[in-house]
Image (cartoon, rainbow, N blue to C red; front, side):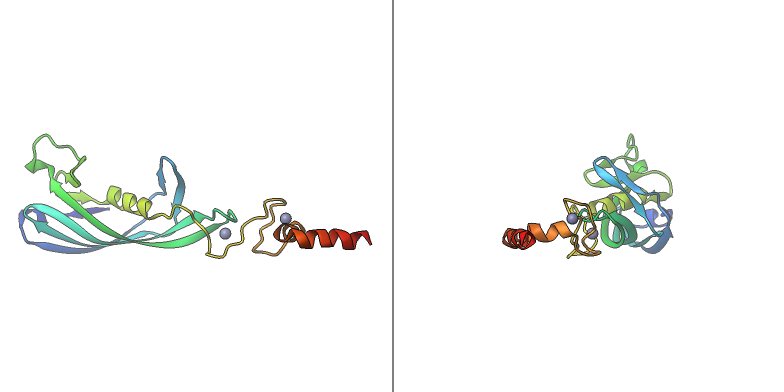
Length: 173
Ligand SMILES: [Zn+2]
Ligand SMILES: [Zn+2]
């Protein structure tokens, strides 16, 4: 996800509006379950040269595949994430690589590569506890049945122990 900023970086006060759509590999990071991207990632940004620093503000839209923590099914979710990054030409700071410092990402040459920032912002936007829908009933802890598809026998007894003992009484007669 590279943007040509050759003209922008030369002109303080200049602006550039861009829209990109590119497929990205799945999101993976230590401690995060791998997350597949189901569609190309769309980025709409406004880049501004403010005193030689290039500010990038806008939106990322992505469709990811997540695994429900209750019923363990995969489902697709749309993410819309705000981006707010600052880039600076490493050439203005001799000795800088392309690493980040004080929130500023350094680039060399005429291109800014957005890929790292897009991935980071998407990862940060993933919910901690993922459910396929708010009222997902999950799996029966005893027999493993997906309770969204219907009740299993064991669940009813767990809900109300009084009904369960009544059930036993009835069964005895
Ligand atoms: Zn679920
Ligand atoms: Zn069950």
